[in-house]
Image (tube, rainbow, N blue to C red):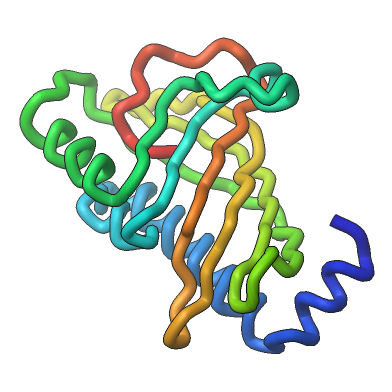
Length: 168
């Protein structure tokens, strides 16, 4: 994304940055506050949610750590979270960088990159830097609302704790 692309994005819809930043914050706050049932609602019906690492992403490899295609798969993950997964209770705290926003390929669609740090807090109070990386998002603005059409979570490290039950 270059300065010209960002400038054109800002001119195309002056309120776009506010709606996009609100989506990014609301998403992170919902996850951090344990409101996992809200997670699929941040996405379009035909969305893609993908977690991968930097090495695989840069090599263009489609294989990752987790991939949900469509909101239905996300709803299944939420159901499994409540009924099938067994894990030590924990929560997250997202620290987000300022997003870079550019126009997407069609009107009302934006490409966005946001760096993040994710701290995991265990039930006993221990806090660890769980993950760092970047969100690469395709965000749709329709009817005044912003939704993720595609969210690719690119983790900086190839190593990820096996405990990945809460979306990043």
